[in-house]
Structure formats: structure tokens, C-alpha cells
Image 1 (cartoon, rainbow, N blue to C red):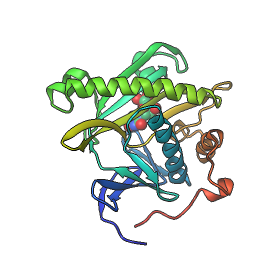
Image 2 (cartoon, rainbow, N blue to C red; image 1 turned 60 degrees about the vertical axis):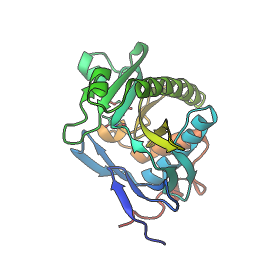
Image 3 (cartoon, rainbow, N blue to C red; image 1 turned 135 degrees about the horizontal axis):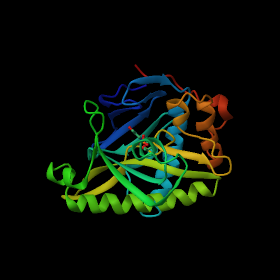
Image 4 (cartoon, rainbow, N blue to C red; image 1 turned 180 degrees about the horizontal axis):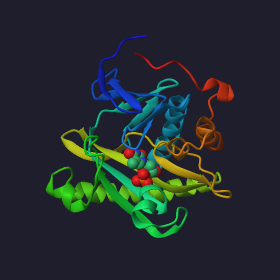
Length: 254
Ligand code: TMP
């Protein structure tokens, strides 16, 4: 296997230099963290499943007109993506109360929100990703008002599309987090969806039983974490060939 230069290592993924200029290889690890790195673990096969799930969702979103960094999946754990300058903002969209929103406002988990709510967090491990407003984002120059408009409208479209897609396979999209990046083409800049969309950064509940099928199973020690990720892939019709036994794939590269 050819050795590629490592550009960046995050908590769940590694970015390597891509085969041609302007591309990167995004490698999905099995590592899982929660609560800003205080809880650490390994979810066997997660990287393989998230690579597939994120590929599937990015392709579907691309088809309905959301520009993304995704180019193609390369193998079990890697995908080729366009190199973008990540905007250091996590955009969270919520449909149903859960997680930090339930805690902050004392709203019972599972309460339908009156409308979809967007929140912004500044990406900083040292600061624990503090929640910020559009005022902070524009005043500190992390994004300008046009970038914000683009990110907001894309996130709402993603929410509508993914809510429907998941509902069709018996899953409720409770909330999710997305990240965007700046892509330059012929002196022109546009904002594209980046990072990944997977059960690591979505809350997905079974629409009949409200069973959690996402990373909350790891965060809250609910057990059957691998099975939950597999179930999402199974319902999307993309469980790797060979079934669950096939998901551990190649080991993490050193
Ligand atoms: P929260 O309720 O903990 O704020 O999470 C909201 C959504 O964002 C949930 O789907 C999980 C996702 N998320 C991330 O992807 N990364 C993070 O660092 C956090 C805190 C949440």
C-alpha cells in the first residue's frame, strides 16, 4: 500500500494527501469519543459503516443539489474528497428535543420542537466547542453573512431531505450536526458540505419504538452500539457485502 502524507488526524477520521492536487483521502477510524474527548472507546466496524453511510447520504444530497466535498469511496475505510478550507463552525439542526438542548432548557427528551432549530458551535477542543451566535461568527470573521446564509439554507434543505429519507426507512431524524468548507474553483469560492454524515453526528430513533440507533448508545452506555450502526446501514440497504461479519475491515493504519 502506498504511504500517503498525513495532513490531519481528528477524533474519528484521518485526512491524507490525495492522489491529485486539491484532493484528500478521508480515512474512517473505529475510535469514538464523547463529551469533548473525556470518554474514549472503540466501536468495532464503525469506520467501515460510517464510510458507507456517509458516502450514501452525500451522494443522495449531491443529487438533490447540495454541493459536497465527496468524490468517491475508495475502499472499506477511505473516501476521496475535495480539499476544502473547513469553516470552524458546527451547524446543529434539531427537530426533536434531545441531548444538550433538553439539558439546557429542561425539555423532556423526545418532545417535538415547534419548528426546526439551528444552533452554531465554534470548533475548538480547548474551549469545548462553545455555542455561538451569528454575531460572534461574523464579528470574529469565522464566516461572513453570505457564508451564513448559504450554510443556513443548505442545512435546512439537508434537514428536509434527510428527515424524509430516514422516515421512509422507519427512522426519526431527531437532530444532526454538519460542517462546511470553502472550495475554490477558477478564483470563485463556494461553500460545500464537508466532513461526514453518519450515526456519529446524527440522532436517529426508530420511529415506532424510539429506540436509539446512533452514537448516544456509546455516550450513554446503552450497549449494542455496533448493532445500531449496522441497523442504520441495513435499513439504508448498504450493509457491506458479507453482512455484519465483514465490517471490521482493515485495521487502522499506523
Ligand atoms: P448535542 O445535543 O450534544 O448538542 O448534539 C446535537 C447533535 O450534534 C447530535 O446529533 C450529535 C451531534 N454532535 C456532534 O456531531 N459532535 C459534537 O461534538 C456534539 C457535541 C454533537
